Length: 296
Image 1 (cartoon, helix red, strand yellow):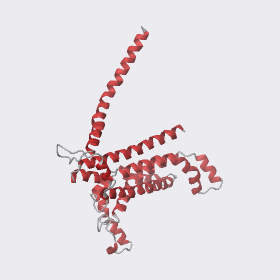
Image 2 (tube, one colour):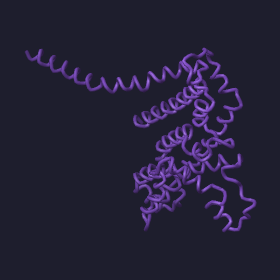
Image 3 (cartoon, helix red, strand yellow):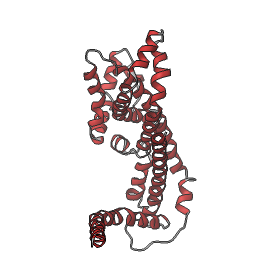
Image 4 (tube, helix red, strand yellow):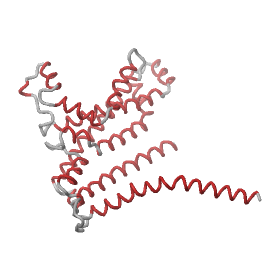
């Protein structure tokens, strides 16, 4: 009787688990896997996004993505954002170490640095669209510092300056969240080791380099991977500020323009698949790194 009762309870538990998981799994299949399969099928065609029929072109869209100068220039623009990701992590690390010290007003400065991370991407884009406009606040500040108004660049209209301007906007938005993460890791550092190093005559830079930094390596690695994912999939800032004009189009912006402006849904689907694969690879690296660090 006891064995039968246990078996009945076990079956009831399994049934409960299945019922609770059925709806989430069904939604996952319907809204994730089915669209993915459909997008992959479209990437092998020349579908324009409207017609009911399309022609099979095989891997032609993928080949064009990595050979056509129009799309290669977009991939080159990603390099600006990747460099920006490195600068973002370095700047966040510096600010986190500086703000981790206990002094008057440190909590206020932490709030100021973190505030941009609370803003919506559209709001950030509108702020910098106003900031970078010709005769705007940035030009006024530089003129007040003695610069000639006629020699000032057009920050979002000059193809040589536009990507740098957009990367700076990205830094302003994302650096705050990394500061908070790094700051928490720094505050968890062994205070005894820092005090002993200070008594032994170690400078602040030496304490940071040999005590704090080695303990931050796992956090920095994860932050770097997340920063790269954000830069690869960035959309709001370039789309709202420039619309992808003047050579500022990112991979996601170009995908949207290809699908809706150029009516090349098949090509846009191929771009989406490539972007998904890149982000998936980065996520796998992040997960494996986290597991290895936890096991260690």
